[in-house]
Every structure is written in structure tokens, then in C-alpha cells.
Amino acid sequence: YITVNSSTYAETFYTSLGFKKVGKKEINKGIVSIPMKRNI
Image (cartoon, rainbow, N blue to C red; front, side, top):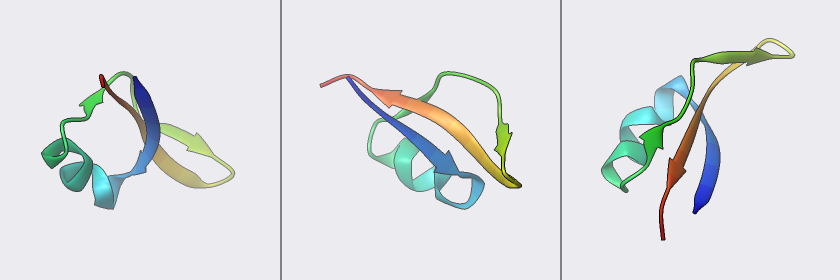
């Protein structure tokens, strides 16, 4: 599988590519991201 930490703005884009959320929103150094994964 492939993992990404998507910005909230790119979540729809990654979802359209087949990625699924695998956790809650995270804040790291002031940047909000959403962990996502896609099986290959």
C-alpha cells in the first residue's frame, strides 16, 4: 500500500485517486494533515 499525509485541501483529490482515511487529523509543527492509504 501507499501512504500519504494529505493536507485538508488535497483530501478530495486523494480520495478521487482511491485513498482512504486511516486516522484522525493530525497537527505537526502547525500543519494539519490527514493520514491516508491506498492499496496497490
